[in-house]
Amino acid sequence: MRTMVPTARLHHEALQFRLILAATYPCFLAAAALGRFKPARDASRPGFQPARRSVFGEARAMAVQAIPFAFMG
Image 1 (cartoon, rainbow, N blue to C red):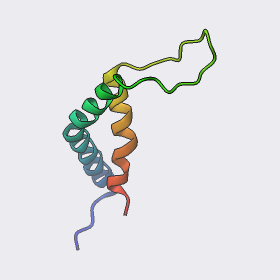
Image 2: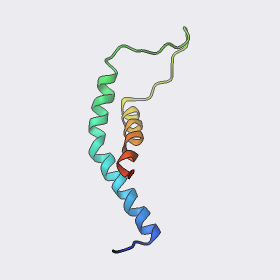
Image 3: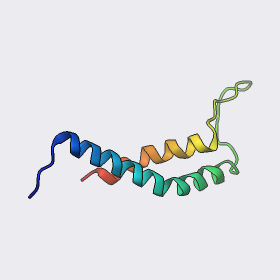
Image 4: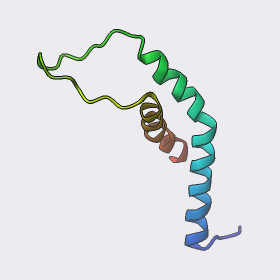
């Protein structure tokens, strides 16, 4: 069994994360775009507009939240 230097392993995991992010981002972008067409379920106070991210920012946030599950185990 080959052991990796801790910094090399971290670099390898960071590279894997970026590759998975690049591969899955289009799916999350489509989900974020479709999510904009759904009626808002926000029950915020009247007169206050909730802060919204761009569709691209929303897709990135969704991907960054979901991808770490690929590294669990």
